[in-house]
Picture 1: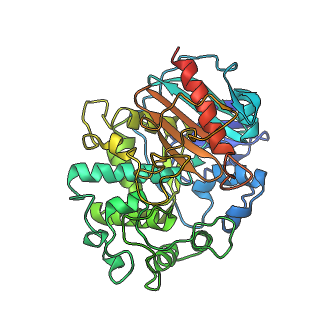
Picture 2: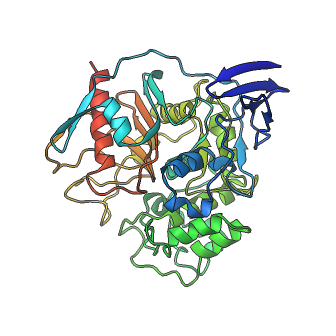
Picture 3: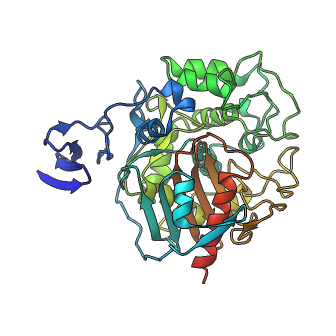
Length: 439
């Protein structure tokens, strides 16, 4: 038995599994036995997941790093194999700064203003800077929230390459019979990825009666899959536009995309991720995907939990166009460029972003064209940068042209900030980092 001190805990290697022990040397069994390394820290008192949208800041920290074990049902573990940690080449970013609302802020200011609990910058495949706070460590598994949507759309690309999905323009009913007789029946896989289904869905995070709030309540109860399936595929759910015409963000549609993909590949998202990316790409740690039915249904709208380095390494996988270390390309040609081809549907185009704001479950979060009293405006261009964004400030940003990946964990006070708040600050800060590293 070997003990390694880390913060207020000790990690104990025992029979291939890491347990945490407290200062009194009392072992705390890892809550997910399949994990090769037990995430640190382990928090004893977890907030109620049904109240996720109204947690306070400390509950949010604890809840987000324990999401993988916060539910009464088990998560799907996707195992690492032949781990290949990213190499390091430290860069001093302390002087990097941005201007917002007439004020100048440094990276240190940014981390405080945005309640960041973890952040990593990867340049040319090497970690140049990283940061952990609130007790998080390099073994912490942090929840993705909607960053997981970008992982799902990437798995759709792999399935397309393998022929398990014949065409992105196939109606989802070809793979998912549950949509028969619903407003989703003629929606295509591409339209689900682009959130242009035209099917009603209320994503309001402040309304306790919204579809998203009901979705969250379903996830906190038993028979979860049936509950969510009934909610999303309710025959009374109406279409408000023809598919492809109007953009409207929908976690219900994203859930349905994951469900449809699982039916097409005959395995869970977690299993497919492990088989096609996690193991062949040499991810460093095991991860957990929130699962309604272990080995059968991982959550398509969110629920991906992984370490900060593996968040970053997934970004490097995208940066490298889905090419594995052995040279095998698992994504279709031009997939990454297609994923950041912003949809031109109504509501995706605005004065702030005339090029559009959404692709294959990736965002355009470049500095809005009409922004004033901010800088730098240039750095990560909308044509070259993919942003995966999750509520309360989760981010994965990939720019293949600059060979740059930035990932961030946060606990914003609000699920979705007001216009010209945190996302704009992130785009300014990340522009400044990109410009500094380009020197």
